[in-house]
Image (cartoon, rainbow, N blue to C red; front, side, top):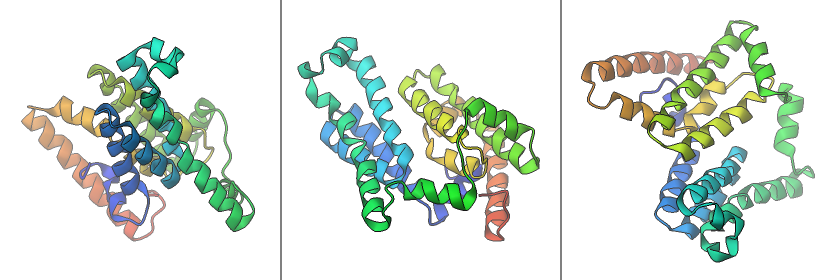
Amino acid sequence: MCFVPQGFVFSAAYTESLFVLLLAGAMVHLRQGQFLVAGLMAATLSAVRANGVFFVFFALFWIVRSCGWATVLQPWRRPQVFVPVVLAPLGLFCFWFYAFISTGDAFAQASTVAHGWGWHSDLPWRNLATHLRGDIASKYWALCSLAAFGSSLLLLRYRLYEEFCLCALILLLLWTGQIPNSLLRYTIVLFPIAIALARCLEGRVVATACVFSCFSLLNGFLMTAWTIGRQITI
């Protein structure tokens, strides 16, 4: 993740670093059966960034695969496994409450990007088609997100189904935006893709060197572009 092209974001004053830490922690503690810790981390996750609430689906997919549909249909038999599902949205609710008492608008963040940046939502496939027909910057951001999705398919190869579903859902959410800006930056939180790439490259010295070299060059290029304020980066 230090080498991926958008890795420079971890050096910026954005929430991606904290988001990745909390998401990874919530995943690990969930799989270790530490449901309360996983839930608290997931709640903080959705407070940091709204799309952190998608951890709910990760947890549900994990419950289905680990405990079976019977547990989902009869949650009272093992209520402890649903603690992360219940706690995950609380951070987002707290953020909405904070926004409401601060500005009078619980959805102030959404209102800000709508009025300030002209952000609106639409069907993801329609937006992607529009981006790919747009200017060079729009095509670049759309292709970057599609490359991330293509790489996420490797998760299916390694049977990391929960991780794939989480990545796919977050990408679908990102594609609903009519403005393609920052699609590359937003995908940095999808760290399971880096895990899949690492597994794919394991034992392949030449391929690993080539990938890391390309990633490093692109990372340096984007870091420089970001430093001098070029739009292509963010």
